[in-house]
Length: 235
View 1 (tube, rainbow, N blue to C red):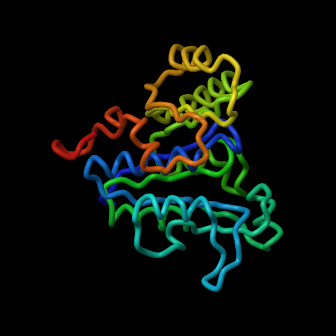
View 2 (view 1 turned 90 degrees about the vertical axis):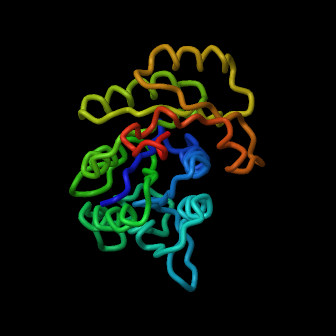
């Protein structure tokens, strides 16, 4: 595989993973990198003439300006907006890591960086081969943690970071995502996360439902990510 990757996970469902991942894609592209998007598993997909399509996957495709097979970006798509392993069982299938790894390899062959967005939080069950954390480990990718900034985020962020490191995975950085328009003590919570999370803060995204992904990207710094990229294309 030519490309390297990042795995974007969140402190919970609704933490703002897709918003942050799309901004991250734009930030990487702004550094001259060819970026492939991936949403391996998605539920809550819409039926279209071309097949099931997921809004999050489509947002990442748009951010990356990606042209290629939708099925490589989103190998497992399910219509019911429920936990993916339950949706898969109701469809008479099971989520397997092999097809996801194969799709990732095809994307990596065409890109310098693959940004992979998980589903739900870090320990969401996927099927007989494990959960989101197990998928990340199977892909062997460093993790970018999106912290949904709301009451309880400190506990969720620290527990997720602890679990990432316990699997000997690299926590490459974290992004704060304000998911409540008037979170109490926002700055104090951000300061606590900066002090306690064992990874650099890549930036934080304030509450702004009308902001474009390319504008949000300007709030992120990606210089800490993927230091192994060749000189001149590194970030």
